[in-house]
Image 1 (tube, helix red, strand yellow):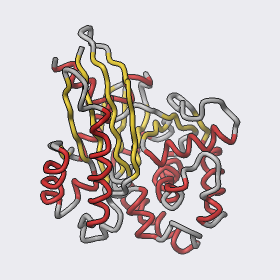
Image 2 (cartoon, rainbow, N blue to C red):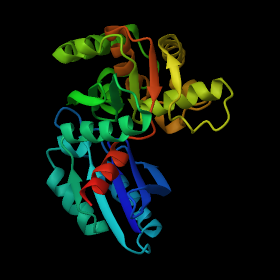
Image 3 (cartoon, rainbow, N blue to C red):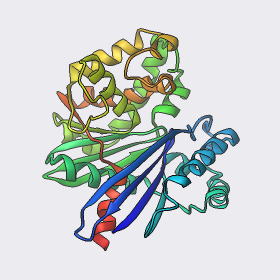
Length: 306
């Protein structure tokens, strides 16, 4: 048996998952920890990681070590996604991480991130035809799945944090700001020619903003085990009603909504906007949530290479 610890450094949060890998090719998650670090906060159009955000993230990475460093037969793999990928000062940050934690972060390309999402989600959900959407803090990954295969994929450089900052979607949202954000998203999504091939297909959802959408609705429906969202489904009408509910209230009131983490309340509208825009563009009638994504895709690839 081997222990594989995957440290996943996202734009809004840092996650660590430990999996036991058996000789027969099966694996079992034995520990999972998350810390909100918001690495992409304040990067702005200059794409510079800010000192406080870097400090928060490194502190979170250091706090994970006691959970895995004592494990036998251990392999640690660290990955970083959009915030580090886009940052002009990423080399400085990667050196700081390596010095403080001994973790050599691999910066995934946008295509790699989207492909691992596909491997992780489709293998477990068994959906043959869909559009996969992973909404992160600083990017969205889109994969058109056709007959179970990744027909097309792309990563686009906008997500929950940078959309919220750019269009002032954190507190009470004005009609002008919402309209500007929607126009921005539509123009960029319309440039992805193959999205037309995904019309009317269900959307498979990953990422923090989408998980939050699932939790809010499960809480509202009084479903037990709110966190068990894998395979959970919502209609497009349910998604739009949730979005409208969030738009109607200021940040202070949003923080009190059941199922919505207070520290995510200021970026949830920006985080849901790519989904809402795609549902309208593609005339999709439902969404399906996946708990499996990049980390599970990496495990699948690792096992196949063994």
